Image 1 (cartoon, rainbow, N blue to C red):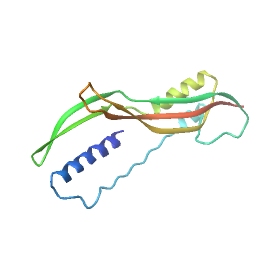
Image 2: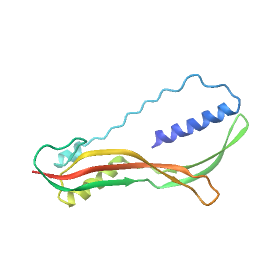
Image 3: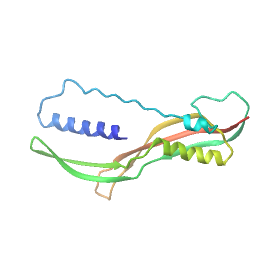
Image 4: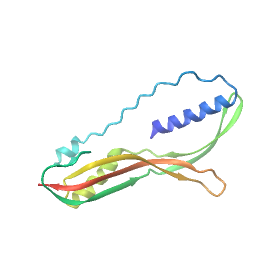
Length: 153
């Protein structure tokens, strides 16, 4: 989320710079983004998370569709570039861990008797929120998780 927020701010600053007659960028900065999820702690507990289908025998437990949005605070501020004031209005999301989301899915699934989530999919979710009638809406980003809870035999 921090990286997405930094990219948004960098984009706004770039647009502001271009429109205020400053030098146009001829190169973009390098961006390295390596996302990972380590399932080994769940594996140690006998639980399987996989984006693949399961080919062995199993008992169906249920489908999971989980949407998570962190709480966020509306920021309404002004920043100055080359003496020009620019309004900046956005939702600043609170910190969260993807493992908190996996823990929730693991907890629910385990209570239902599942020991695996197969066909696991994680995607960025977005919602548009405003603040009052006269405020411009802005995006808040979260995570959509889906999968199939099963009990492997």
